[in-house]
Every structure is written in C-alpha cells, then in structure tokens.
Image (cartoon, rainbow, N blue to C red; front, side, top):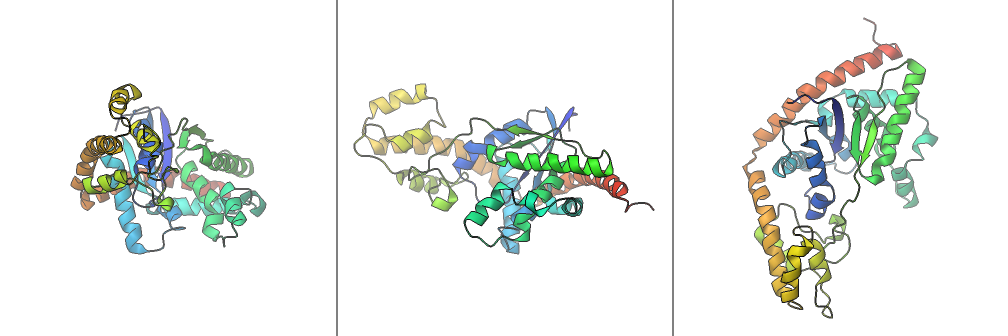
Length: 318
C-alpha cells in the first residue's frame, strides 16, 4: 500500500441492499476519494452501530459481506484502503466507555439523532443515545487528519473533536483533532414515484439489480401525460449521460415515454452490469480475507493508541 502523508477514517453501516440513489448520492464520491492515493485510508464496517437497527445474526453477517463486496465491486481498491470490521477491534468499545466517563447526559441529549427520536416519541436505546461516543472512539483511535461525512453528520465530527479536547485537557495531550470533509453537491436522486429515492418509500432502483429488476423499476417510474419529457425519467438519465448527449434523444422522442424509458434501461444496465458481474465474482472467502488483512493493520494502530490512553488514565502501569 502506497505511503500517504495524511490519514482518513470513515465507517459505513451494514444496512442492506444499496440503490442507485445511494451510489450517486454518496458511494461513488466516497470511492473516488479513497482511491486518490492522497490518504492512508481506514474504512470500517460499523457493525456495532448497525446493531441498533439489525438484531438478527444471519442478516448481520450477510449485510457485512454484502457491504464490503458492494464497495469493492463499484471500484474500491483493497490495495489502497484498510477495510475492517468495527467489532474486530475491541479498543473501539473500550475507548467508548472511557469517553462515557467524561461525558454528561445533557451534552449527549443535544445530538440531532437523539432529539429527532425524542420528537417522534420513540423509546431510545442506550446504544442509540450513546452513539456519538462510540463514533468518537471509532475516529480518534486512528489519529486521522480527515473524516469524510455528509452535511447531516457534521455534528458527529464536532462531538469527536470536543471529546478529544476534553480528554486531552483532563489527562494530557493524547488525541489528534480531526477535520471533516463535507461532501458538497450531493446528488438527490428521484425515486420511481418522484420523491427522493429511499428504501423506506419502496421507490428504488437496486444498484446491483438484474436486468429484469431494472426493467420493472424503470417501467414503473411515474410520468405526467401532459408533458413532452418525462421529468423523473430525465432526472435519473442525467446521472448517466450529459444533457448535451440526452438533448437529441429526448427531442426526437417527445411524448414517447416507452422509448425514453427503454433508453434509460439500456444505459442503467450498461452501467450496472459490469459492477454486478464483479460483485458476483467476489467470493465470501475473498471478502473475509480483505477484512482480516484490514484488521491486522487497524488492530496494531488502535492497540497502541489505547495503550497510551490507558496509561494516561492510570490503569496501565505493569
């Protein structure tokens, strides 16, 4: 793995099958950033965070394998990135507990995710409440320079920085303060019903979908019979081809929704088919080996930082 001057850390929850909204909205930019070679990259599967949502062993295992194979299939180069499971590095949860002891409940109650759940009258688990402290540990163990996040996750980086500063103030300089890389101009991909593409709306086009799944999803895109151009079809098509390329196609087929949907199907399948083939060729054994290789590198760094923290708090002295 090439040497890089700066370090990047990021985590991805194993939440299930991705769709093209996930791909164009975040995954593609994320992979492009990681493959630049500008950073030594540590990317973990946030399976303990995922435990707040997934409490079934078979589903969790399948989602972890799928998540890693998804990212490798869309172009993440395991030779450029250390990929590992959060749960494989016990220091994540150990450090989270240490951070718990210097963190107040009112501070955590200011978290956006907590306030959103409270506003919806949800019963909030301790894991969901404590989420920012585990995330702080996830980040600070690796002394990163940068953490790429969406605008909605900016607060998590602020929490990690606050926690590092508080620990350093109480126990002495230990943790590096990371900076967020905020993904700008994130694409909002319309779903088949015109709303934002989302699994919760059931309006998705699966990223690794079969030809048949793509056909069914695209043919189901809602159209307005009073318009020459099917708005939602065109909005998705723009993600695949430039407007200059699309202009003659849509001009020549005004009002011919079936022809335009079929053109979108062909372009989607042309994009998805190679990734689908790559994913199918990735065996479970290959993915597990990628995670084991990543674990070896991450464990060494996390253990050294945790040893330093344990010495600072006074529990490591023999």
